Length: 106
Image (cartoon, rainbow, N blue to C red; front, side):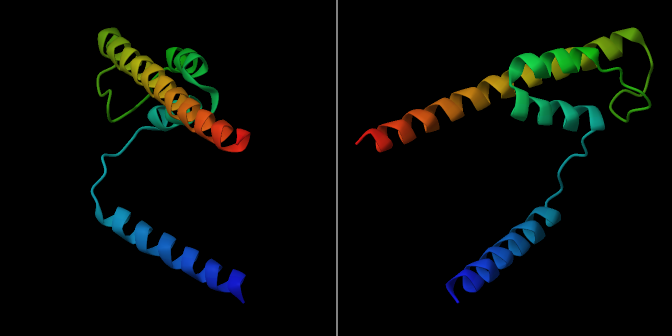
């Protein structure tokens, strides 16, 4: 049937893309970065920045020394990244929303 064919095609596409992505060497991300990125994608820049400000890095590869200066710089970088990507997501979603509304208003 058509839905089975589409399911197989989707499965093949995802399997091919994941194989390609696995061969690329992506830098490892800490759990703080992953959680902050997820928060920026779901909650936007304000909640992600507040979340990143409250994080305390512990035994992280990115922050090897436990000095307060390095922790502060790491936290500041997370806050800036969370704010930037949250606003970027708003900009993309606003453009898509306007395009969809114009399409539906016809």
